[in-house]
Image (cartoon, rainbow, N blue to C red; front, side, top):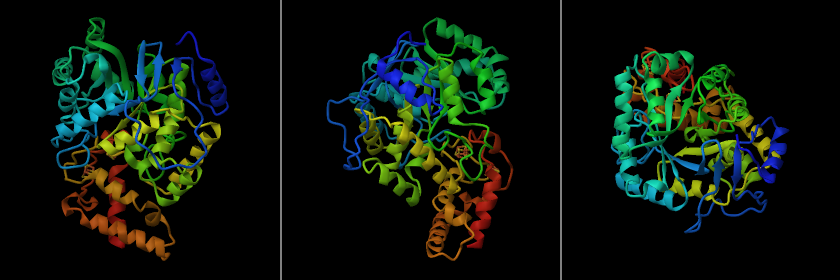
Length: 457
Ligand code: SF4
Ligand code: SF4
């Protein structure tokens, strides 16, 4: 915990205390936190050359970090679009170099990757190796999620990460995708890997140790009590604040960003945030949701609303956004340059937006691809994305309304434009994907419903 706290943070603590949002005393200081102006302006402007994003300083780990981190799971691929978990599409090194250069020039110093993100470690390592080691912090993970991982395999994974990243230490190491104690025991305790990781930390090859969490509210405290973690990474966004079930499928009210955040802050543990835009879903909300946000903040895109919500929480160490192109990076940098936090009424407004978003019945898929590849060839996140583009029209009983008819037709067009082999129709219900989804989505059940809906239209 920090041993001092600025007056502004104390005031903010009082402000958010009334909303059930803990601030802790971890944050020593942050820069650039004036109130967001009410005056409408252009959606967003590129941050001026030479400007830097705002920073926060963390006494517990002795680091000053930019408020925005570059998530390297969805880096640009050679074929366009972003890469993903377990996907081995070749990445576009030149595009990544340009993004890394822009990020560092604008004060981003936190880069997050993992062995499980295809070529990400290698390409990120090459891009970063062109910069002084002191200008960036690298975070990678032990992604030993398959079968019963051995000590040797875990060691090799870490050594390969160092090689790929062209570094002799990592600043932040995460036990990847911890869900519960049983997973920790199997993957890290019983094989001796956790003891080995602690030895590497003592040798200085790992500066800070934490884990990324995908379990329920009940699972977090036991894992937190295992060790004096330097940080913990959680899924946090306005739609998941009260309940991660977020509509049609997903958890059943047992996980909420609010609980996870407040629990960690209460324990004095810096919070790293993943999925602030829910895998892009909160950047592409329905017209109804977007117009409500636009009315209140004409100068903010839906993605900017989502990122500002997260950045306004003072216990958040870094907001990680998985970016796939320069445009996304520039917009995100503009948000965190001279950052304007939401006030209490803005935060309350975002809780109402979350209710509206959930009423559209979207499947809470973050397009992370942890469930892929499907042995039957189904493009699971692809089908969910198409469903979500028309979820309200697909789930309403008012099927004769013109806008509903149009949306359902548009859904069918997108659905049938996919190769037959990757459509929901191809699902054979083998359940191989079920345990892999960190959002705990009932994937086969939803494939069946999408297939039925498409057949009916
Ligand atoms: S249940 Fe369906 S979507 Fe899931 S892995 Fe099996 S075939 Fe693929
Ligand atoms: S279904 Fe689950 S695992 Fe698959 S992409 Fe969506 S969120 Fe990720």
